[in-house]
Image 1 (tube, rainbow, N blue to C red):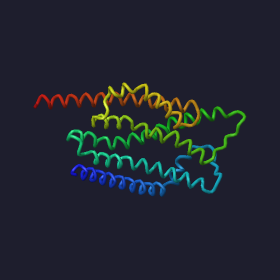
Image 2 (cartoon, rainbow, N blue to C red; image 1 turned 180 degrees about the horizontal axis):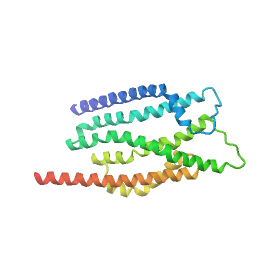
Image 3 (cartoon, helix red, strand yellow; image 1 turned 30 degrees about the vertical axis):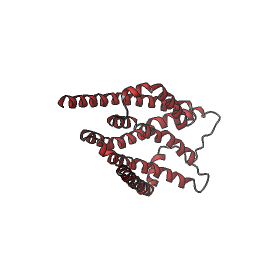
Image 4 (cartoon, rainbow, N blue to C red; image 1 turned 60 degrees about the horizontal axis):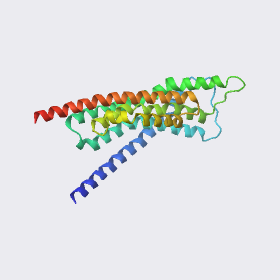
Length: 243
């Protein structure tokens, strides 16, 4: 009976935290929508051509997507904080301090991933595709197609750049370890290949860029996991010697 009550309490706490995160996302979405026109102008300032609209609702959907990306970016640290608070009772004192520092890291890595996609991957792939269609074709951009392509080249990188921090957090909790990651390397590489094809537009260059980025992040994650795991073992060994 006591275990059932404890489970109900945990589920109730989880529900409350999910509701808080959901409400925060809506609030950030509204904030993003307030400034969406300025963000839109910033994203198209380097274009040499005007974007076309094929319907009266096209620009509204683009504004919704831009506000959505803003809301996701701002919600990530809050969602990470509530996740941390939910698992807090299961963490040791040192783990609590260490994992708390991961919250700003998640936000910074997401923004870094977006910046990497926007400043490096997006213009590289766009230039490559424009080069293929220079002769015999006239380039004509619609707002929907352009921004869908932009989001495909930026948002996945924001998410993928979170990998090292997520692995660090799971290693600190004892859920992951470097040996397990190394054994799953071949499977992960296959999954990365599938993800690269799914997440990017149908061109070879963007697939390769995303795949290389994923592999590098995975190898960095293994290194970080090995460091955290070694420190964890040293701490446990020291505690055993003390006792």
